[in-house]
Amino acid sequence: MGWERVAHGVRWVMVLPVLGLLLGSFYFAFHALLEAVKGLSQGLEAALPALVGAVDLALLSAVFLIFSLGLFELFIHKLDLPLDNVLLVKSLADLKAKLGQVIVMILVVKFFEKALAFQPKEALDFFLFYVFFEVSLLPMYFLIGIWGGPRKEYAAIKFFLYTLA
Image 1 (cartoon, one colour):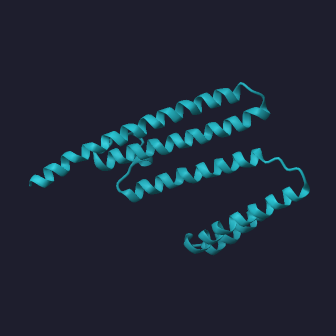
Image 2 (cartoon, rainbow, N blue to C red):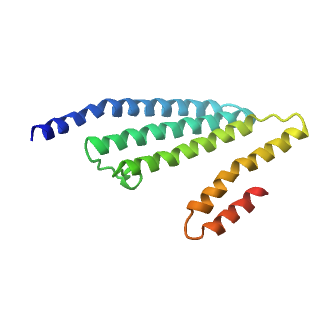
């Protein structure tokens, strides 16, 4: 009985990382807002990279928010939020799945940042960009083909055809 009481009390140690992650989320959200305002005050050519950077910071803020609220809900107390379908975390697998989705979006935004910064000088640069972009899609083709849903072969071929063009 004594160990259970100690274990129940130790869970409050998780308040420190939860608060740190929550503060980090607010910090990145504030800087995303500043980046968006800065981007909107410029011309279209300069605004696009700034807005992509703002989206990147906003997604990073979302990662910190999801992780902090997930840790709070797992270790400290159940949350009664109106957005329970979005932030409901019942296990570490739920938390990992939600974080994985946001991290994939961050990677997509990072790719767009790199594509915007791409300054080709020769035709070979375009060709190499195309070739290596297509090579980077091969793992996704196999992921869909192996672990996809009921029509995974159809989905993998459709993905290949749509991204080839």
